Image: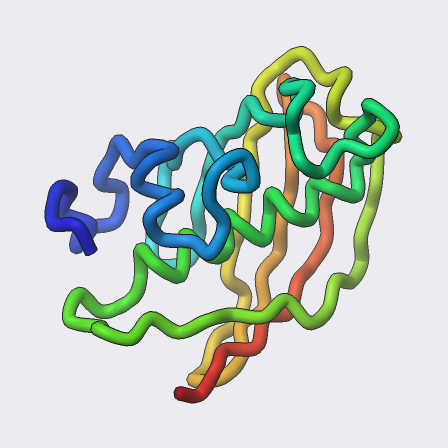
Length: 156
């Protein structure tokens, strides 16, 4: 933790792209989230504008398919883990996305969505080794993609 922002109290804001990039395994263009808008011990709300960028690393044939929203949700879950980790945690735990279920894709593409994305993730259950999140990607109050994700934590 950088110590620049007190993350000990849920809801502490703002948390920027740079703050996020320093705490998840992805950097550069692969860090897709713009900022954290709200968070608590059980949920996080992030926003993103990278879906409109022509250099988005997830684009294929100049399009960003909606299924790529799962990566946006996974990054929100990862940064949520960083936010709720104990302040004295010197060895952050790595999470591995192992399952996506109940996925509902409402639009075929994300790159043509003009509004910023809102990425919602809620932790439904957690124990020492596993997490279950529900996620939803929205824009202009329209759900674009939703589902559930299972994460396994390393035990080191």
